View (cartoon, chains in turn brown, yellow):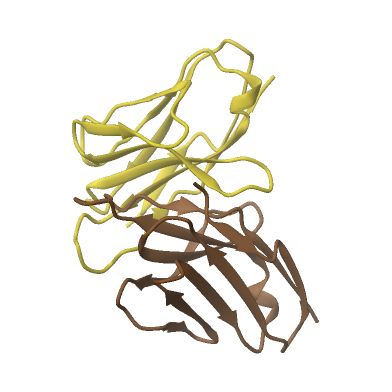
Length: 114
Length: 115
């Protein structure tokens, strides 16, 4: 089943903050976050592993609540370059290895205005 | 390193035609994946491979076939194209290692229209 992302879209002014949430009905091994600009390929932002810590990437950080099977992406002091669609990709583990297979959420469109 | 390359960039097919989407990576990655992305949607896994000669189905394999004869190449074959296969197709690869780097590296995509 596809992870559920919320909100579907966010509109910000430069310097404002945003939070994007992602939840799954499956037990998770890791959560990956990607950003995709219009007409381009997704680009990796960060990964959060089961039992791992909160990760950061410049002013973008994320958390992973294993028990609730949820992850949140935090964008602080947003910049114009943050505009794009953000996807969470969730890796489940049912014994053995997942071979890195990800199930992606439907995406959250982030628009940052000057 | 070129990373992951895909050809063609764009293609228009008529219903019932067949084609092969090419994907090549030069990072010596064992794991490779094919995704499709419909407008305004997330990525759905079509097929994946864990090494030369080993492939398996993802979420949406119907209407597609794959092969993996080398580590570098992972072509996706569309047989009897249908309008429902109109989409953007992304190939990705990842290291087999249990540790970092964990990321999937994506190719630039192939935009396919079936009319």
